[in-house]
Length: 347
Image (tube, rainbow, N blue to C red; front, side):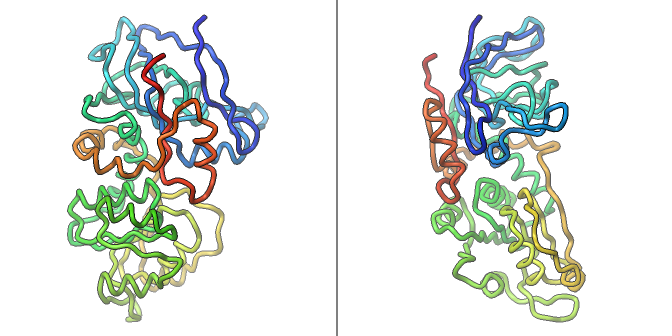
């Protein structure tokens, strides 16, 4: 029996690297050798709670981690069409019939190999060219999340947008907005290094919200407007919450002009009460953005075209042999922007 190493949830805030049976593809499947896999906030969430509540009685169980992979096909089932050994692919983790890859399903992508069940181009995988490094290709899944957020915003070229949170999703949204031709994109965060990255990927301006008054700075950047009562407000059209903290919602409600929109893409923590009266005074539209209903492979061609720009989102590339260190970085607030685990060429 051939085996492989796989990262699974361990004790609270820790991973286990275990030896498991290497999957064998059926006639409709392909086997991928993983070459890179990003670490996501969802991975660290499972670590914070010590697994996932998927036991028969709702108890915590250990699960394989990783849902942001890029790799190359090493085995192809007899009935698979249009895919071959050597193809470099990114994956739709939500297409797996045995459960979402790395989020409670049978398989996780932080492993040496990953089985793609019922492999099909455009549904479960997309092929990308050798001009794109595997670590950058591994951004495909989170960039699909960011793209769905931008799509949900309905942003148009004349709009002025502020993004709270300069993590991978917020910075990805900034890139997509600028590629969409949006006039002015501001990024707010409390970590100076992340704000530098925001400017490097194309943001028009940044705000250090730990040191600056956000409403005043937005007024300087976007001009003057008013809410429904005529009270002065920045002329910001769209607010994007990629931070998931109560302060963002409260700042948006306090700052929003009449008819502004707030898009929530970050996982929201339990927070203080939202000022619904403030929302009413601005007729603020609240839009939730979850996942990537159609965007998972819509983003791939543009990720390929602009891969050098997207590469700037990766702050740490950590070999699979140091996976525990990779998760230590991801679990430490402010220690890393985007951690991608890489795999040696040799097996």
